[in-house]
Length: 244
Image (cartoon, rainbow, N blue to C red; front, side, top):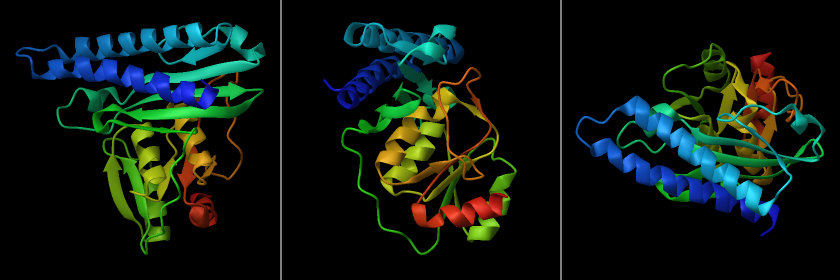
């Protein structure tokens, strides 16, 4: 497989493991915290093992693994989130959780895949969806539990409809699939929260940047990213101006 196919395959396989574990939500007396921990651990093991077998020698940066500083000098670094949206994963009926697998090569996002296992869907840079048609009133996807302060500013500037949703991967996927138009996050995230979604969004023709319009950078010494913007390209200037 090439890197694009590999990212999609790894994300899909990890997603199937999570679906099997999630079936236990129906068990009487299930310990939700323990189930989330097992899901994180099992997905991490599957992803790390698959990368090691397919691309031995590549470095990995993951939410669920100890950070190895050797990645900073590596030519190829996989940035993964084995389970994005643990809260939603543990709630019956929710589909807004994801698996992220991205590859950074020579400092740039090269490939990525976002699996939405509860929807049996994988979005990837191998065959990115075509950009959906624009709608008259922009839809602004926001956190259903922790909307950032910039949300109201953007809603007023764009006269946008708010679309509450769970994980970062699910929010970005909504833009990619044409179910929403703007995802602006100002509360801070880690690189594994956005690397794979940003890779797929960019491949699909969407605008991706920091909220001030500057370029996103990955595989840095500190993997914290203060803010993020993914939106339809024709809305980018308006969002950036409003956020300023």
